[in-house]
Length: 205
Ligand code: ADP
Ligand code: MG
Ligand code: MG
Image (cartoon, rainbow, N blue to C red):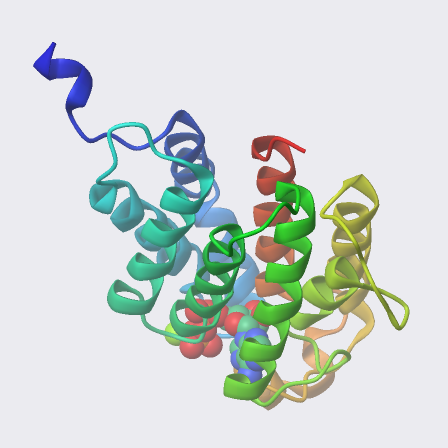
């Protein structure tokens, strides 16, 4: 029937958008303490735009991530638009490389590629109090590349995000606030860890 062919977001993408819509005020409040207070609006707006972009009748995870990447790159400003956009673009790309790798292994490779892209464009390193402080430990266990996006990788991202509460910022708007940001985690790192947790729930092994 024609109705079954109507493009619609996957249940996963719809839930992700609902999650960030629910967290809009919370992320704005965190960003108010350490920046300009718009991160919740940026993330919720990007996810809502991704839902509107969904085109596939039966979207794969790669389709969803491609929609999210395009929405963040085209429709979201601030730092989070281009930087989350680049990461989602690399994750989507890793899922569509030919070969036999599992989805969890592809996502780990996508995290490494995303880390490199975000670091190159944004100029930050782990320890600068940015989303890289969640992304790097998700992609690497110490110096060793992680083989899979798994529970350990997401736990490391969550711990890395929480540990930013003790860091002074060297990049982004928080760098203008010096020690006033101490005690509040970097909101972009917290959001990134939340995205990875949602990805862990979605991927199929
Ligand atoms: P803006 O400061 O432009 O309002 P957002 O509020 O959209 O940006 O996003 C803020 C988040 O972006 C920060 O919490 C931080 O995690 C991340 N961020 C800012 N600058 C950089 C950078 N150079 N590299 C990586 N992440 C960054
Ligand atoms: Mg902001
Ligand atoms: Mg802003």
